[in-house]
Image (cartoon, rainbow, N blue to C red):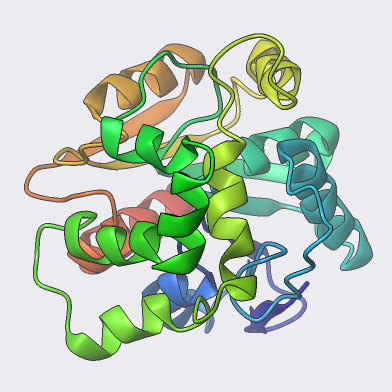
Length: 267
């Protein structure tokens, strides 16, 4: 597993977990903003970014959680501010429940860590046998579509290329497909019980400080998902950003950084 590790090693850590189909590059503005005062760590999940992309790895939620748990313990991180986006939410909360005494607070951006019956047709189509693999791994359609539709403001060409850069071949797109296939929609799915258990154990974390910074124009993680977080985290401070899409760090990095900086000083 590759990870970025910037800032003073003795400082309180900010651990940023990306989703699909992004990688640690997504967090570059947060890293630049906080690496002077905090230790900012941004891993690439296995199969993503600069991390290994094994072809025989199962890419299940439980394994991603274990990977982050191992990263936290191997670096001996404590007093963690856990920042999450997209798939990073379920992975982050799963690791936090196992290592609750090491986690201080949460920053939540357009993600979920609970079961939901909602799935956009565009994502569901990527799960169709054979067709999904051809589109996601053959044509890189999932990552390319995200680079067009997951934001409201135009992406500079260099940023679009940066988001797509690791996913340049059939082999290197394996996690992009596996993450989509691993969304548990009904009992019997290999990750259904894992995600259900993560949701059921929220109570142990509900009183930790939480900041929710939400792109309200997200067509995937809609405001309905934000409201589910509000139900589960008693101390959540909510920033609902109008005109901001799924890629909050691309549409509104300054708003996210400002909210995080002021909130972290208070908590």
